[in-house]
Length: 80
Image (cartoon, rainbow, N blue to C red):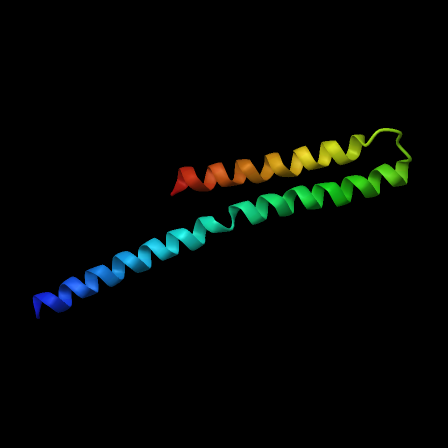
């Protein structure tokens, strides 16, 4: 096989691998924001349901969901 074609094939493979890595990790920020938003919405609902004076449920659920997501990301990074 032609050495130029092999070199081009290797370059394409490297670019594709870098693109896959970028896509794999680019959603972390959006998912973290989503976890915080879910915690906020669920906590606000529970605070209004139980008529709490301070937003205890909101703060607790935001921290809980964000912590769980960060742990998930750490476990995923350790495995790869």
